[in-house]
Amino acid sequence: MDVEESNATVNLISKEGDQFPVPSGVANMSELVKSMMDDEEEDETKEIPLPNVKAQVLRKVIEFCEHYLEEPMTEIEKPLKSQNMADVVQQWYATFVDLEQVLLFELILAANYMDIKPLLDLTCATVASMIKGKTPEEIRATFNITNDFSPEEEAQVREENKWCEEA
Image (cartoon, rainbow, N blue to C red; front, side, top):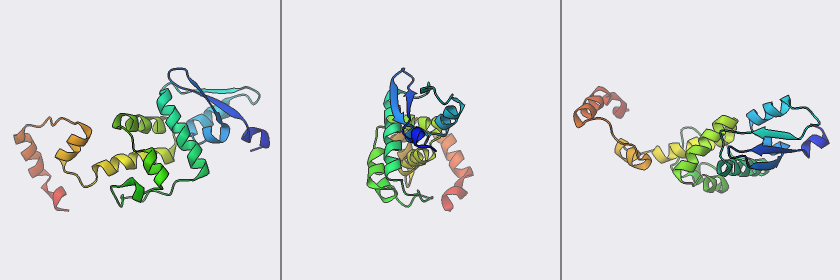
């Protein structure tokens, strides 16, 4: 990478059409953006449309990428050793994913779409930590999932899968 490219700015364009100028190093954390930048002509101003990412979510993605370049996140151990994300990653990252569920799930979708593995790992681990150690009823309550089994069907499924709970 030459000196000019490291100072280059890329305009990431959200679903709503908002433009976010970011250094190319930040933009390159996304494999999708990196591949789109490779396709661009060298002397053009690089504008990368991200039609699947809302402005609010893109702002968070950029915040994550900027911080990650300054302080890379520690590798997330699997299986998770704790339900508390501060025990799994540095405090900044744990605070970063302390979000409303809707935004957290939108971040997962954006990280997947933009192909940003560390962000995808962090957000998915956060959801896993919300599930860890909970009963099916508690998980349903956490994620507002309605039980579509009748009590008889649920009893039958539990009986057929009793071996799962014995482990």
